[in-house]
Amino acid sequence: MILALIKVIWKNLHLFFCFIDLTPTHISWQPSVNASTHHTDRYANTELTVRRGQAFTITLYFNRPKQNGESLAFVTEIGPSPSESHHTKAVFNLSEVGASGWSAAQGPSEAGYVNFTISSPANAVIGRYNLILQVTSGNKIFSRFLGQFVLLFNPWCPGDDVYMDNENERQEYVLNENGIIFVGNAKYIEARGWYYGQFQDHLLNICLTMLDLSLYYRQDPAIDVSRRGDPKYVGRVISSMINGNDNDNGVLLGKWQGSFHSDENPSRWDGSVVILQKWRQDNYKPVRYGQCWVFAGVMCTVLRCLGIPTRLVSNFNSAHDVDRNLSIDKYYDSSGKSLNIGKDSTWDYHVWNESWFIRPDLGTSYNGWQVLDATPQEQSKGLFQCGPASVIAIKEGDVDLDYDTLFVYTEVNADCNRWIVYNDGTKKRVYCDTEIIGRFISTKAVGSNSRVDVTYSYKYPEGKRVITMNDYKLNKAVSLEISYANPLPEPVNRCVLLVTLMNQQVKIHLAPLAPRERSKIYFEFTPRRTGPLQLQVDFSCDKFSHVKGFVTIAVASA
Image (cartoon, rainbow, N blue to C red; front, side, top):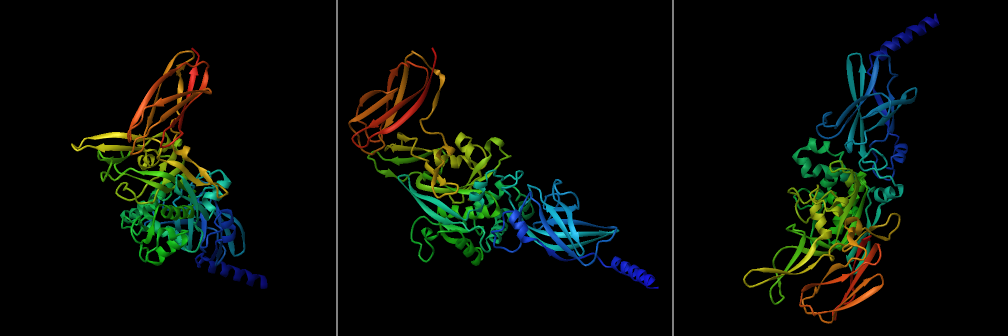
């Protein structure tokens, strides 16, 4: 009798369960476990923050056990118009984790709850996602909103475009909240501390909001969000948003002269957090004021916060080539008075960012560090934005490659020309300095506050050309040309040139040089041995001394 009653009750309960939709009553995002494995435990925000291309786990509690004939699937959505064709929406059934695209697998479970492991593709769009549970029972489909999580770039994932294989570099360029900015001039380089604070309160939300305020988003929100899986796109958008010169609610306005009145002098800032929080508190109106190192410091904060490895780079004697003719041109009248012609200039120093990612649009030869510059100098495609420009492309002179490679190339490689403008309007170039621009290009060392010189990552040493072995033959006379110049606006006298080859030195007395005058001499030498030989030149006069240059000569057998 009792057994029959139990069977009746169980049958009725089973029928009762069948008429109640399977519904999640609670979700555990397992924040401590996920944050630790995804290197996101330092973020101050409370919502789940994970990195793409890597699995995370959640636990769902249900109102009843799942019945036969019922199946589960997950949906992820991002942006205002989620679309599977734009890769901003994905629907995926339970399967083995590791499948291409989004995937989910059921893990160990107990009565009342089920563990799930969810994986995103390594090229997924980054940002804030909705997570939805889809329950299918017979011919009915029910959807239940579970909550939101944030997905970031993942330098620890080999399949991610921003993958960086050195852990010390990941610690420095992604996780380090403290930095050093090198300022001053080529004769005196000063280290200045900067607090990035990319994990502090509200910073992640501010960075995501920044993307949604951009002109790119306003023009086409769906397309803009769909492109946020591409670090070069995100970097370019951020470079336009750090400055407020495009009337786009950018973070900072720049000012280089005049009084700052009640606004902040750029030299007052020593970190990004207060700037970004003030921007948010003022309803995303540009903060006044910034200069190059401030723009770069804030941009580094935003890119590291989003998961893109980034560092600051300082270029001393930095060229600003307005007409993009690869030279900085200064004009004088015949009496030596400077003329207000042209807008080219040279800055004591300029600070920009380098971010680390691959360039499938250019080819594997251009992977690695990419220049991004938020300082509003010149417009690019109608906006004040710059980069990403491959550092390798800059060094190799591939100036036609995207984005803004020519502009950055000129900043480190421009020639400085001096011109005389005569009364009849004709011009004559009287001086050219090929070495003064792009000196002591500097960045902070990994794991310490020391300065690392990266000049030769951007360009080959001036005068350090290796002549091919076919150019010179053993025991055959060779004619050499040596050019020299007076960079001063006054004459120089007692000019002496010392030419040294294989510890043999020739002293040559030269004629005086007029202001800005260039000259050259020719002489012969006969190589007496094969292999590389270094020819050294030392120029002195009554106004300066020991200006040096050298060239390596490869001598072949006769």
